[in-house]
Structure formats: structure tokens, C-alpha cells
Image (tube, rainbow, N blue to C red; front, side):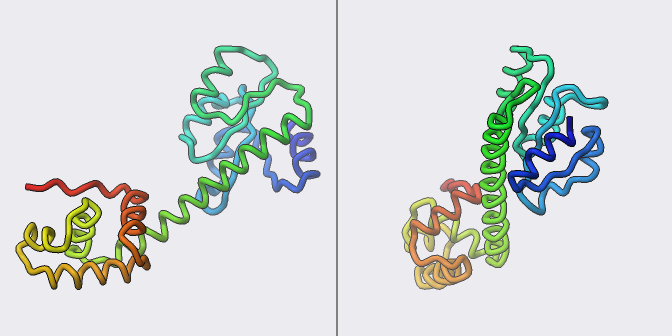
Amino acid sequence: MRRALARVLGAHRYHTSCFDSAKRFLDNVELENSPICAVVDLQMPDMDGIALQQTLSQRVPVVILTGHADVSKAVQAMQAGAIDFLEKPVQDGLLLAAVERACERAREQFARKAELRVLRQKIERLTPREREVLGWIVSGLRNKQVASELGTVEKTIKVHRAHVMQKLEVDSLPALVRIADKMGMGIVART
């Protein structure tokens, strides 16, 4: 069955690798280097498809196949984030559509991770004081208010703000706020 699925997917220009167990998949697949999705059987020797999906914890979009459709398992798989739950024998068109949705999600996740890596590298170039100023600025404070909070003068805050904008390669406050939001930087609470 694995080889037949690989042939169908390969005929549609998908690059495939087959594994005879969830353990072999986990031991041999690089999850961070490129966008991937997984087509897994619900019943495997060492771990069922839903357990594998939960182990991957949303890092890899999963399509689950089963020879024994079970509504409760289908619901469990979909609630855990499966792209689809298909009954074998599966029609090529249904399989290909599910795999394309899974691949699209994988590409989106990979692009988001790459963007966050770049943003994290930029944030790491900031000095501790620049990070502090960034937090206050995205909280909505004006330069003068930030200066008051930090016990310095407005001119110093303007210099820090300019360095932050330069290092993060942005030219507006809204762009700065978007970066802070993407990075999960919380609003600074006033004391």
C-alpha cells in the first residue's frame, strides 16, 4: 500500500519517502529543513496515526488513512488537527486533494517559521536598552513618556528608537508594532 501511494504521489511530482513505522519516520525525517506533510495509516505497528499526529504537535500537517472507518477516530483526528481522514481504498483524486491541502499548510508554516527566525535574529541585535525602548514604544507611549519612565531625556529615547528602527529594518511605527506582535512581545506594564 505504501509503495502504491508513493507511486501515485510521485506521478504528480510529490517527493516521497516511505517508512514502515512511526518510529522510523520520527528517527529519519528532518522536520525543520523543509516543508513536509505526512500521510499516515491509522493503524501502525508501534504507534497509531493519531498518536503520531499528536507527537508531531502541529509541526507537520497529517492526512490519516484507515481501512476501518470509525467516526470517533475520525473526530479525534480532525480535532487534533488532521488535514483529512480518508478511508482505504482511497480514490486518487481525494488523496491528491488532501495531500495538496497538507502541503499548502506545510509551506505556510515553513514560511512563518523562516520569517520568525529572521525577526528573532534582528531582535537579538538590539541592545537590552533598545529592547526596553521597543517595548515601551509598541505599548503606545510617546518618546517623552518613555524617557520619563526610564529616567532619561527624550533625545536619548529618539536615538534608541532610531537604532531600533534601523536594526529591525522598518520605517514606521505600525511596522514596528507588527514585528513586536509577530514575536509575541507583550505590552510593557507601567509601574
